[in-house]
Image (cartoon, rainbow, N blue to C red; front, side):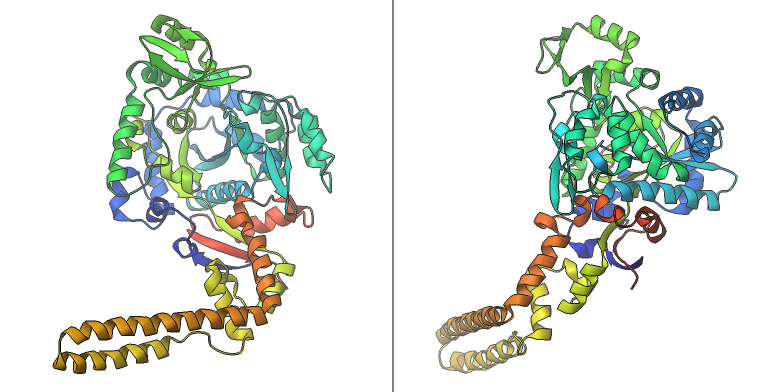
Length: 520
């Protein structure tokens, strides 16, 4: 693939907090550890070595989770290699969107794999394992229930509740039967497994197992055991919530909008068909929207015997991840990087190394048909992010009758009225205001003339205007970035080397927006 790149800020699509972090704004230096730079990983390794990770439990859990699928040599080597103190992980996480969801899921995975490879080249004495942490405990079914293929949305209808990773995916067959093509990969994944987590591990392993990507499901008793003491602290003393609230307030005072909202208790109660918040009311621990409640002794006893019945929220999940994994970096999108910036003191409290936050790659993909259309319209790929008016003006300048701007004429008017105001003021100072008001009227009339010229020219070039709007809707469906709407199958079904091409085109630690297009 060929590419051209834009600075993220130039796209006008990202929050100020994320952009300031990606650009290294010094005002944020207190909210994270080391900057996302390859040379900083040496110091990050030293920091992580101080933490004691239970590598055997992690390895045993992974081997158990992979027991029902074929493990590639690369994955097997990476899982067993986690027993070695010189092996570290780089991690991304994502929801269990059906059919992998929007394109950016793959950008996250590819960034993670590519970063692990770069680190191995720079630090050959260490091993680096790319990890996909499945958000299997998430209970927001609506967010994962649909995907867009060739401009049409497909939705999985199910009445299952609770952690989505525990859902039985077999009813997705009804949706599969509606697809224009039935990819065997997903038929085997959804119809051959009993849970959505297992199905997701299967297809992600098929797509990326040869690259050594390890898929981890933290909804697992042995792994929750490792996190038990932190969950106990959260239930009794609320340290995580208090510290995150303080940091959040600091970010707000700096003018940033918080991404996550800490609570006193940052845990859910997790059971079959149920994941609900735990709150403390009148000395008792209440499971919201249920009749379940516990005394302090009862909930601590449950935590001790069954830690798998507790699930961290957005504030504690990152801490859980770093407690379980020998992890150096987290690869995330704008929202994720933003809420991680609220958590540094929480990590310091629990004496866990704060990972290097690495923004994932960002991209827009233009197929050959779109490239031909763009060239015909006379628009450069990097101009696609301009607002509608600017984009239309570019087209009209090339295809219309002439310039639609009368800026020079306005400046001449302003200059002329400036001279008039001086002469009028000599006669009577009150006439200066009158002359200024008359100038405003003239300039307003010129604005109206300019708008009429624009409308008339647009009408004359109606076909081109329609094609331009269609192009914009194709690349920004409903005003959203392509990567947040389109599914990879829209490209992969026509080119099975699509993911490989992406991996070659995207460069980790490169905070630009890639515009990728097929070779001629």
